[in-house]
View 1 (cartoon, helix red, strand yellow):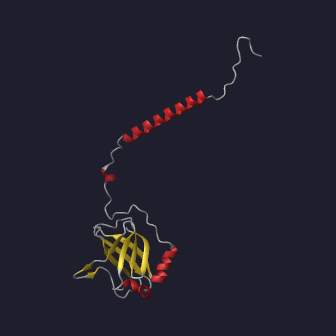
View 2: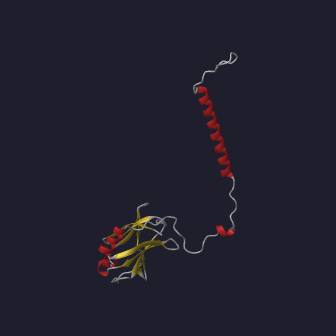
View 3: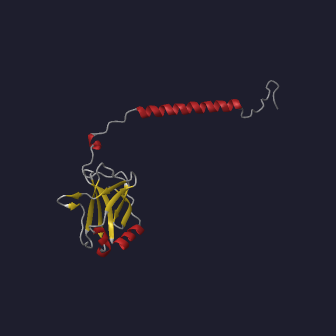
Length: 185
């Protein structure tokens, strides 16, 4: 029972005024958090020691993860073309791109080593098509002749203007042979 002096208050529903107050508080809290975060981003990071900032000596490593060819692609290159361990690397100066492969079956790999087979390296990113340079005293910068099993062969493409960079995916065509999606290291 209620005393006569106190009148029971009716329960208030969750009214619009209360929702507005909660909304305003959320906006203020969000603004405050954004200001604190921005102040933290403007602060300069602590200076690292000379040992941690020095570049490691040796070969540069590509920031891109190499996607290895699938099992079926490896099997195709070995069974149809007689080659494996395909790789494309940029030389130290960046003016030459070297394509390397290892011969597994010399009979099947013969078209890759044919001197008359036109070779090109294509970069789909900028539609650049690189050719093998011909030197006056040396000739084409590629290995030709009869391939031998287990030997590694190479050919070098001119990259004048640095049209192909580390991390690019390229296509190599040598006569009827074509290898797609090779990562330039």
